[in-house]
Length: 463
Image 1 (cartoon, one colour):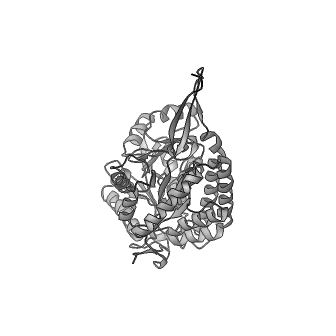
Image 2: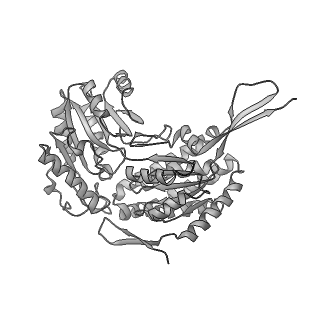
Image 3: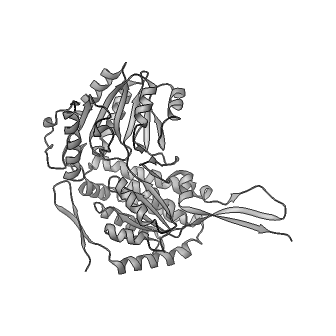
């Protein structure tokens, strides 16, 4: 008899959904079915794949109301914000479908008389996608649609916190007419996931999650020569220069820090502000942070829901307490937020000043609604502090000087560098990290290179 997965909703602590975990026999059947279906799907044209994937997106978007309610119950994001995930899902999926013909076309090389030479992009076969809960659809779609478009079969193992998201994918693909076996869902334990990675029928693994989770995935794949994409954590910084539009920076960095209760791998977790605008920025930032309404995510007036679980909130509360003990000052009175309560997932936003890099809140991933703000003297100090991290997902600069932004960006150790923007994925650009933020790439034409392998054709046409 299979073990049972129980989803505890952060909304009220109730059991929201239960699902049996796949046993060895179920996993074997799933992989066998996927491998068989993929052989035929590989022969389908890119246009045929695109037609089905486009219908898949149509079907998904049509279910937006049910999807947003399930997101709220499973991981706590306010419904009013969850609609943005549906829109982002559509944007990314349609972009990756649109660029597939060019991205998957044969790569020509310089002509040579009596030879036909080119490089073809071959699908891996079966792609195992292991997705996280914090942006349950945006994370998964980054890998699922390009994998299917590339001619692979996909097995999606979603977070144990958001199993219904995987089932939504399956429902939409079935309604779109995707051949049976090409997209399947497995609810699995960590141990079963590791065994599945070691199965020879799995050709590639796309994982999004924590740094320890990334190490576990890499270790599970270590005895096999397969590709592994790892999108892990972040401690993403922002630098507000003296020439920045301060009001614009405040508005966007507050949102970048506290959207989704700070539970974003590319959310803003530390801010460095030039001394000339520091006081004005801090005052505006703290004032705006105090305006959030923390509460039940099903309430349409709520713009900050609970964190995913009480233990996650307690971890962030601990970081704040340690920082304050070491000399930091919190600028937001958590007691003014009605729903805020220690030992629960409901946690008010916090803004810390008087911080430095001796404090974990400035160096260790928080993944919650807290941000530290430091005063800096100029570009060189900001660059040194931004790079003083084990993570390297994104970073941003707030300035009116594009040339300076480019010069600073060349020195920053991240996968993405923003000017006057943060916490956003552009599907036309490669999404990738360095250091403990992972390796590999999704989205953009480059993302397709990770969902396929190169196969060279060297044909002598005349002897």
